[in-house]
Length: 118
Image (cartoon, helix red, strand yellow):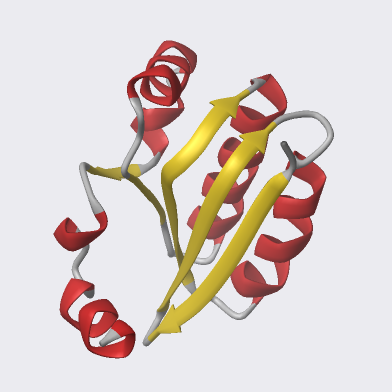
């Protein structure tokens, strides 16, 4: 399965919803989508509730995004990690560089998401 990616902007946040696999084949696609948003100085949220797999290349994408956003005083958040994704993220230590939320409804702009999807 490839990576399906959707993005929505909410104020200074951009929400990327990921579905499928984030691996050596698909991580460059995510990088290509995130870089312009980082350059716009948006905070990034990754909803990974439908992500089935993340490899070391996917972790690399998260680390790079966290570093680049930190350079412009912004951040990367991740939410909805399935147990298998959470384990890889935690073992890699990348969660120390991210804001971690259990679900999308815990995000600071969750009310805006609900309104836009209604």
